[in-house]
Length: 209
Image (cartoon, rainbow, N blue to C red; front, side, top):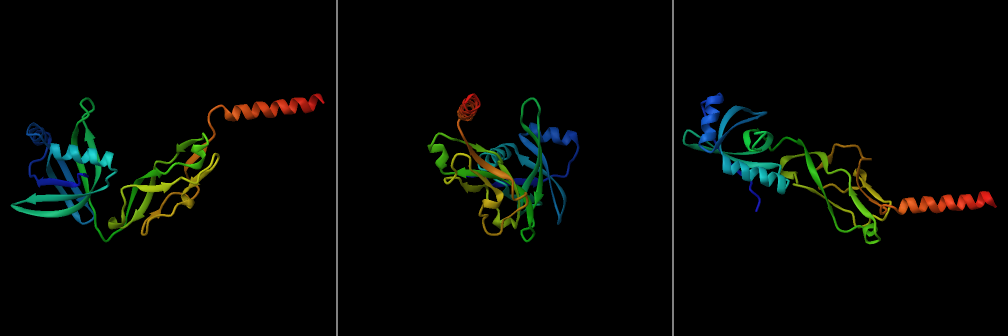
């Protein structure tokens, strides 16, 4: 199950001392900002944020729901994680920056590419190489997908697939160049060398003749 809900509380205290107190309480400091949002300092539950980070890594999650509590009231917002500061030794999150999304405005983000199905060339002994693992796209937030699935079943040895070959989901526009290579099926290691040796041998025989 994808962890998508972030619970956050507006905090008044700022500075290193306030941040240290939050961490002692198993909480994290954060900040929320956006095109229509004045920067708001946040207090976050450490466990919730650690699960969110794992979800972002495992499920390629990009957009999250935020439930923001302030003065006994709560607001629902759609946010992206802009930056996470980690402890360099313990590799634990120390601070998180969130960006509020305006649902009526296009966003430009990077989404992962996911290769699906087995290429014809692989069944012949070829090797599938995943060249470009992320693409930059623009779309309205409600059109965003967690990953772009690309069918590579038709690729034979020596074939490649580029951005221009991909059918993008409705509402999603690629921002990278059309000739960017996503994946290629190459011959097994050593096969190319054997062919070169064969060709060299044939050339030698022709010269001797």
